[in-house]
Image (cartoon, rainbow, N blue to C red):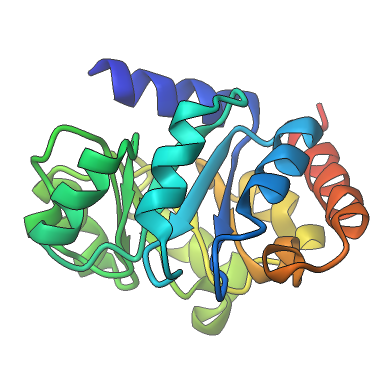
Length: 209
């Protein structure tokens, strides 16, 4: 295991959540990162669909908050290399993107079917993002695919609600990925206090016991 893989693994041991920031601009990203860190969240993904995402990743890496910062929605090798150059500690893809592998950082590779999950793992993914989990059947679907694939470290993402997060972990998820249900409109200038309340509730749910 590389140092970056160990860092991501340790972050998810402390709090098994990947918080996903996707916004219209990066103006409010520093505030969001401060709130998430204060709540105890340790891993954050900044989606490349956010204008200025690479600059936000670089800025976040230069002002550490105890967070492991990754780049999300990575679709090809060029984006993967650019994100690593900006300082991303890991990459997240929405589907199986083999060309995002092998750039020196762990990859959380998106997949939906058991075939795709196995392909992601065989391509070298550190974690397999099961996306979109809610549309596929939620906790029941995760439980069903883990029956034949119990060795895969799965991160259900896409429609995971704060109140459902613990159920996914009990069903065997390595972590959960949560975007809008956690962030709300905070990344676009919404109430940071409301975000703090949701983040605190999420951390309590996923770290209980």
